[in-house]
Image 1: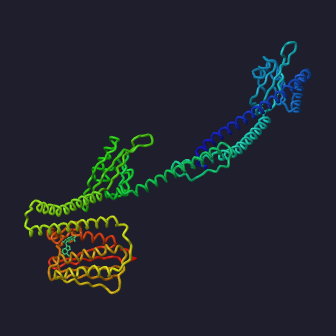
Image 2: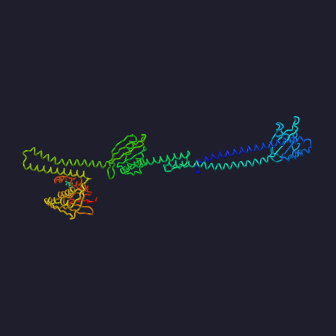
Image 3: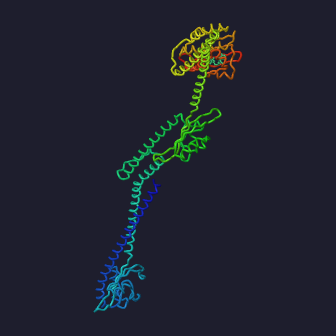
Length: 593
Ligand code: ADP
């Protein structure tokens, strides 16, 4: 508080005022008292001089020595120096000195003044008496002629002593009252400056963003009102800051929750915001990117370009971008827009990055699927049409040939039926993927009953089909029919791709909380390069052989789909020329994968 410059400035002014007024009052009192005292002495000297004039006229007849003596006694009695001076300035008698030893007094100021004005006064240091004296002189006039001068004198030592004492008292009084006034002034100044210092400190805190401090509002004067106004201002600033913070947090949460990448830059192309999705897409840290130039943050020139264009033209722009990394190719769609403030001034630009890689991939898969499905459907349809046209055109066709053609038409229509059935199955599985019928059933029974069909099929082709199923039931929850399809498709392939004399083995067992179904054959096996791809739709190692065997290329895709929709998976272990083992792992009822 005592370090407040304002306090000391105010106090210095106040002190100067107090000291000056004390000095003026002191000097004025001192002068007035001195004047009064001198006037009083002068009056007293005048009265004595008038008396002396009277006495002198009576004594003038007495001889010289006696006159001198009487003046001397009179002077001692009234404690006044009395002098009688001749008209020519010769001292006739003096109460304190021998007239013979005294100089001519004609040129004394009081005598000169008495001669010209009828009365003369003077104050000076008397060499005779070694003290300051006041002299008063009157002329003695007879028949219009000055015959002598009467002079009375009093030493000023008494009055000087009184005046010194008075001055001392005045200085002491003025000094004491000045000290008291200065102390009171310090308290008073402090009383007014202290709240101002608190207000300054609060205002400084507010300028640094701290709105929590408040002032005491006890005073009822203008300072109290100012304190109230400052408190209200701090409150409203605090509320506004809270609202802005809440809005910013909301915005930041929304932006970080977005799957699209968002990058905002200011007019100087420095990053204002870069959300987490953008960080992931561009492989940069959102926090470290803040306030850096965009060209320094990302090495992708297209992003810098679209933002620069948007800033320069003040318009929106859309562009596609392919980011190639070591691992993947990412397809992005960029939407850039200029940013404006409340007054419509351009303050920056924002670019939204949509990762369309997955969409593109799905679109490609869909196109491939449609193309493959059309091709697969077209093949039997073309064959049927050709055969039917031949039958129609050639009425004289040999009956044996006609029967063979009709047989082929039957085969192709069966194949067409199989393709349509598999396509419908895939379509059903995809549409029901999230709502698989949750029914509990015994997988042992499903495997047993489905395999029995293939035992007889195998026998026809001299292929042994063995089934190894545990005695105790293995409970599974899901779509029983779909599980039958898994067993059926795997066994169908195992028999289809085995040669005469081969062996197919279906094994089912429980491992921890999973059911494991293995279908092993001693067939042609699958090359390693094809092992990953055979689960793709329409992928076949040997297309002609597959078609010949009535395959659609969809069987394993259906198996994989069903296994995954039941929380499981399918894998393959195969040696070309030796055989293959397909392994399906499924979680038991009440467990999740
Ligand atoms: P397909 O109807 O052609 O059998 P799948 O989807 O069931 O279609 O099988 C895809 C391809 O995988 C088959 O064309 C075949 O080349 C190969 N394949 C499937 N199972 C076996 C197996 N047990 N042994 C050898 N190759 C197999």
